[in-house]
Image 1: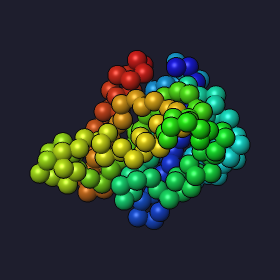
Image 2: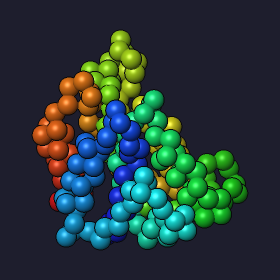
Image 3: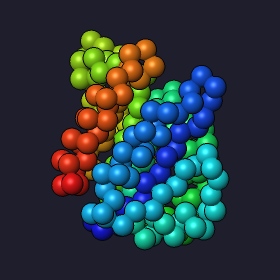
Image 4: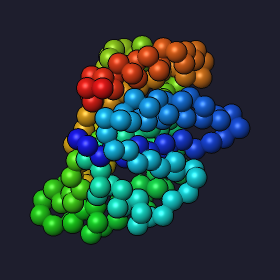
Length: 182
């Protein structure tokens, strides 16, 4: 892992200005700069599809910094994926379903959730015993389909009702040390 593409997929709204996702995005950059070559994309700022495809080809690892909106990516981030993950560039369609990925490398999700941490890993709670990886399974499948391999995901929880920015940043730093040895 030498080249890392970091994508901020937050979609900015008056009720959700994205300060936390921007803070975590900046923390990822600051933590990895100097040890890795970094390129970035902020989806809301606009992008060129071909340039983004080249960034994915360049990168050994992709980090997706995103809120989880209605259990998935924000609309603008999903539109980005729909445009950038082009057939013939990201997947080939030949052979067995799910085995035509053309992008090599790893990826990591760094996510923010309104869901509290206790809603995970307990069969009696909302996610019915799933951990964060299970709750993100559909997004993992998206990246598996194009040939990427997962790294351990990060999640900040209960971010609107009980925000604790210092805790999230500290936990993210610990996560990055564990995953990237920085």
